[in-house]
Length: 370
Image (cartoon, rainbow, N blue to C red; front, side):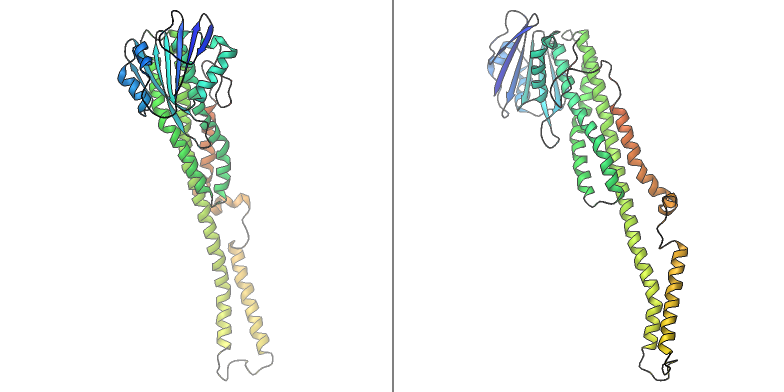
């Protein structure tokens, strides 16, 4: 377990590697990084008088995003995005009191590290007390979840292009993308509801400025939730387009086999008829007999191919005739993923109420300086 305490007084701060009691002035931010779930240090909740069951859950249990008001302190559980190759989330428990902010998380938190790094260059990020800093932290956590939607917008065009040519590896990639979207969506909707409770809370521990910040974070969570819902629809439509393209490929194969069979069947009949071991077959004793039979076979072959050309089975249809050839249903299935992906992009680029933030770490949007 790694414990770091940050004491803020009049715009200045000092860092400590232990915490025993609240200092005389200012407020303190205690960050607890766990290597594995375990018991909380006794001095932590004894000095701050935190709810014992809530502290136990924070150090030992997995919780979805939620908000609890204990009167003299608040519990805000949020989720953020890890810095892993795969899309995974982690839990961070925030205890907010009048003069203390305690954050508990398993392993390193990119959002916490980004905020602490930015605060060293811009101490005003720690202004406003525990409530506003908690709102800034929630902003960094939620914007990292929104990055999943942005990444999906970048990759969906490639998936659509591969679906239209029936790439056999597409289904594996779609399954992986669907798992990534589901992992984030599982926590985004509860987090959105939690932030809605926080911004409308009447607790005296949160200032009006803190509530406005939480309201901005709620908007980011809403954009993320809507974008992820649209992403699921886009993936489903991409699979439909793949199945349509695959069916079209199977139809092309069947068409080629049909043409071969239709051309060779009469030729096989002629060869079989004149190949019988019987006397007195027509033209069998003539020198020009085999030439006549071969000529008949050439004529039948030309007629058969001519019929298929007239029907449009051999010549590839032009792009203008693709709609009639493939059918309106397949065309709509091919267009739908691009339309949905465009909707996802439009949703994810809506402006925020409060503009950009200033947290300075790749993957973490920077927090605003008021």
